[in-house]
Structures are given as C-alpha cells and as structure tokens.
Length: 315
Image (cartoon, rainbow, N blue to C red; front, side, top):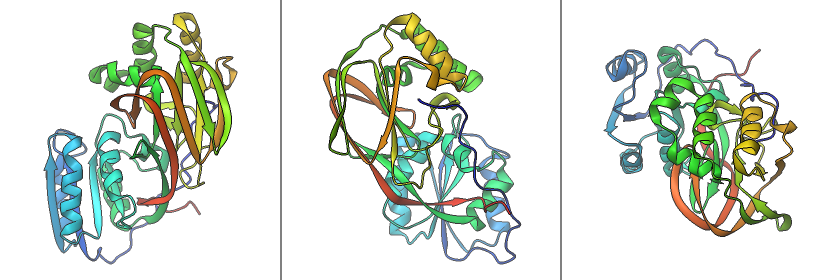
C-alpha cells in the first residue's frame, strides 16, 4: 500500500551465451494463455536453442500445474519454464520452493506482476533467452497459511475485490478495473483486527484490509510498496482502516496514482513473521487468487526460497 512509484527492475538484457543450455528442460504451460506466436513458437525456439531433452506439460487451469511440476522434478528437470500469469507462476513457485531447480517465467497471462517487477519483458524471444541464459537469482517468497506467494497476499477488502473482479475488465483496464470493482462492491466492513509483527503487537483496531507485499508493484498494477525487494529477507505489511465508499474512493484513487502514502487510512511496516487475527472470517488471497475465508493468518518470509532466471544486471 505505501508508495510513490513502482519498483524499478534492477536488471537489463545482455547478449546470450553462444553455448546451448545443458540438462533437462521442462515446460509447464497454461494452454489458454497467449504470448507471441503461442506454444508452437515456444517449442520451435527451444529446439533451435539446442535444448537436448524437453519435457512438455500443458494444463487447462493453474491449479492443475503443481502436479505437472512435481512430475517434471521426478523426471529430472533441471530448469522449469512456466507459461502463464501470476496465478500460474504462484502455483509453480509454491511447488518449486526449496527445490533449488530454477524457474524461468514466460509472461503469457493477463497479470504478469512478478515478471514486471523482475524486468522480464512481454517479448517471447527475449523471455526465452532470459529463461535459458539469464542470471539465476535466489529470491524470497512469502508464505501465508502454508502456501507460498511471489507478489503479494491480502485479506478483507482486498480478498473480496480479487474474488469479484471480472477477468475481462482486469485484462482491458488494469489498475482502474480494481478501483471500479472496489467501488462497486465496497460495503465498509471493518472488523476488529490484531496484528503482531516479529513477536510484537503492532495493530489492534478496526480494519478493512491487510496486505503483505514481496515486491513493489502489486495486484492491478498498483505501485504499493516502494521499498519492497524480493531479496531483502522481509515482507512489507500494510493495513487500511478505510470504511465506506468515500474512504475507499480516496484510498484506491491514491493507490492507483502511486500516492498511497498520502492516505490517512493506511499504515505500513515491514517484518519477517506476521500473525493476524480477525474477529470475523475474512476472504484472503495470494497473487490474485482467492483462497476462501479465515479468522487467523500466519504469514512469513522464506528467504531465498526460489531460484528465478532474471535479466542480467545493467552495466
């Protein structure tokens, strides 16, 4: 929630090595997502790049991906290329966490916020080059109620907004879709919320939304956490006390414009372990996917949990 500008990618493309990638490469693809010339082009480019053994898995829904990632690991995959949006990336990252097997991101979804934050372009040839030859970075993941996330998680108003946002609206209008959807569905439902950060009481009051950020630009393309980095061993924590359409119009408008620090309804901190208790069950989400309702959230950062193929640093 708290920031002025979206996180700037700290990487830039560099010429690809002349040697082809070694080892076993797996593709786990959401077959309904489009990117460049599609999966046919991807297969051709991998063949042209000299990939020796290629494992190929397609799924109709992101929730089917973990089983395919496990199959790839069991078959000896040394690199997993994920074709899809943030939901697909999240499902695959949750399965790959702690394995040490690198993940390459091919941003084929409506929302590609993890790729944006890392500087991976929506350009198929370049994304493939980065996936095969880019720098391997060990990045943090968040973990909420036992499941990893790469971009953000949230509960309350944020969870309701994610659950209700229309997919076509998100695809066409990005962050404005979230403002519009939020204003259509806002009910001003604040509940007593208690938050402990790294063992200390931090917040105890009525609140409508709690957010946890691993990177700076979050759902809807909103620049929310200016200081967030996916390799700093911490998560950003934000809480909103906005209640009703007027408060949320001000809050969402300032967030969409990159000025959430000006909102009187926002508090921000950062930490490694966070516990949240609500007096009533609240919908929670991670990386744009709703996960139901809960009265308690246990959130922590998992440092260096995932190895990701990223652009090389700028000279």
